[in-house]
Length: 154
Image (cartoon, rainbow, N blue to C red; front, top):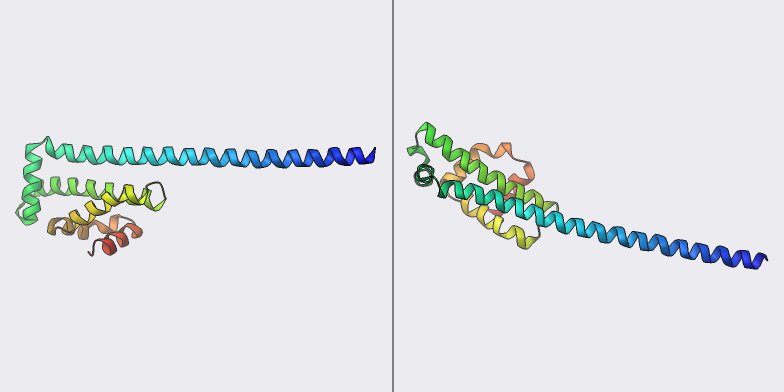
């Protein structure tokens, strides 16, 4: 009788262990699915934000003229034009910062972030972009600041 009870106890422990392992595998799979969904949503949100910023300039002749003028020489802008240029630029930098944050957290892959890195360095490498960055870099996190300065040689 004790032997039968002992065997039942062993089988119960075995099935209990199998159940725990199966539950852990299910949880791991669900976490993976959530991570993939979060990554896709983050990339979609970043791209929508970037498209909105770029379309704003494309659809507004006056803003496009201010951006072109500012790209050539920030000092040639009136106070109102400078405010427009700064707002547009700050929005771009803020978007790049968001992409960098998602990349650092593993939400964006290296491949997904590479275009943002290239754009950041191209934009912040211009005279006007660098001027805006130098003026406002303190409003961004230290990690992003080091990224910009290391990756973009600023």
